Amino acid sequence: MSDQKVRLGRRLFYDSRLSGNGTFSCASCHRQARAFTDGRAHALGSTGQAHPRSAMSLTNVAYNSSYGWADGRIRTLEAQMAVPMFNEHPIEMGLKGNEAAIVSRYAGNLADAALFATAFPSDPHPVSLANVVRAIASFERTLTSAGSPFDRYLYRDERHALSPQAIRGMGLFFSDRLRCGQCHSGFNLSGPTQHEADVTSPVFHNTGLYNVDGRGSYPASDRGLFDTTHRRSDMGRFRAPTLRNIAVTAPYMHDGSVPTLEAAVAHYQSGGLASPFKSARIRPFRITAEETRELIAFLDALTDTEFLTNPDLGKP
Image (cartoon, rainbow, N blue to C red):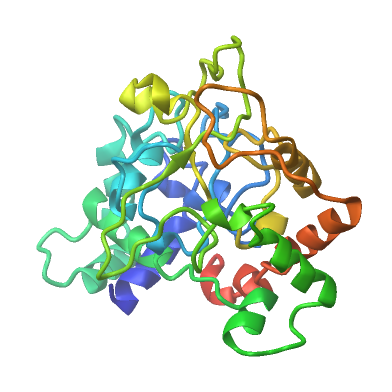
C-alpha cells in the first residue's frame, strides 16, 4: 500500500480503457452511490452479456475472508480480480486475448506511464497487468465504511444517532427469535472477516431460496458452492454479504430475486423453502408488521452517507 498505488488504482478503477472493448470499467458494476453495487439483479458485462449473479458491494471489502458469492478458494482481492478481468462465460471486462493491447494503451501514454513508474518505482517494467491488479486492490482497500448512524451510536456513544424505532429493530436483529446476527455478524455484519493477525475460514449458507426438483436443487445456471466443490451438501450455499449500506444495494440475494428489504424479511420469516441442504440456522420466526418496520429502520441506519458521497472514493 502507498498513496501512489492508491491514486493509480482509483484512476484505473474508473477507467474504461481497462476493458477489452474500451467501454467498461470496474465502476460500471460498482457505483459509489450504491455502495459499489449497480442496482441490477444480474450484472452486465462489457459486451452486454448478463451475469447469473448480482454485483457484490465493495463496502469494507479488504476484510473479507473470501471473495465472490460462492468460492472459498479466492482469498485475496488480487486473486478475485482475475474473475471479472478474464472470465469468458459470461464476458465481464473482456481482457482475455487483449492483454497486450490493454497494456499498450497505458504504456503508450506518457501521463499514464509516469503514474505507473511513480507507483512502482523499483519495477523496471512498471506498466503491466500485474501492477494494474496491485494498484486497483490498493484502492479497494481504502473503501472503508464506518460512519453510519449505527456506528455513531455503538462506537462513538452518540445516544441520539439511532431513533427509538431503529434501536428496537437492532434488538430484534440480534435477538434469539430472529437470529439475523448469527450469519451477519461482527463489525461488518457479514460472514467471517479477516484481519492482519487472523486467518478465518469462509462460511457459506443455503437459505432455502430454491428447490427446483423437490430434492433441494438450485437452478442449473447457478448452484452456489456446489459448482466449485461438486458436493451435494454444498448445493445452494452462498456467502453472507455485508449488510452495511444495505438500503441502497437492492435487489437482494445472489441473483437479485428479492426486490426489497420487506421481501427479504418475509423470506426469512417463512424459513425459506424446505430442502435437505438448507442451513440449520434458517428457521421460521414470528414477527409483527410493526416489528418488521422496526427491523427495517435498523437496516436503514446502516447507511453511511459519507461513504456513499466521499469525493476521494469517486471518479477522479
